[in-house]
Length: 300
Image (cartoon, rainbow, N blue to C red; front, side, top):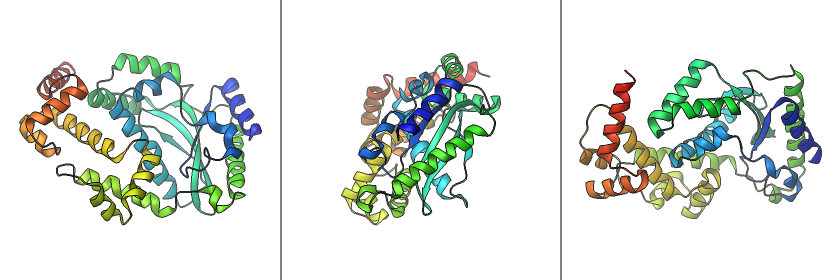
């Protein structure tokens, strides 16, 4: 693995390309054989750090990179086929799947590159509206973090990345089944089902036992794999989703009463919703709505 590390470092120092490894299987970074790769688990650029400073944006970022990216690779007719993608913050990345026997274990992500202006502005507008990010700071940090729009070095670098992905896959394949400790395919179905259930039942009381029953698994299995994949507990995820939905409704110009917003998002009472919202955002729901309307009027 030291040779892989040297290649990644060379690409970063020579071309400004940062490489990270998505470990969908949760067995790469837990195995000592791959310990040399431990420094390639996540992006460290200033733009990504700014996005992840907001817990709501970080949750959606994790959803995109851990769940949606896996689904995109797994649904591809050719699992091994590299492709270009754009992350939640509007950064273009080159994705090289790590696949063994038609099972997706992970992916190499090469970036960060600038996407087209229209896509970038769309991402920035969403980040500003949904999470309150400063557009000027987004532009500044984005410019500091991306290294252009296209992969440098012609066809050589994609070929090198493919060889690295193949080498990691071969090393994984040589491990015993117990060492791999991989998420089985049905676990990804469980995670997708859990997120679907939560999104559809935000208005009502959500119990882990009900989610587990819907996903046809035990509560402990569900909780373990959810935290492993999302980085937070199911309870934390539900709260973040409820607050995110409340923000989305409040930002809309329909003027739905605060009590109705609380009901739609599954909060027990208007008072509890208002107190919880202020505790987590620093302002009341009414003030948040007012600020959103002011921003909307300014942008007209």
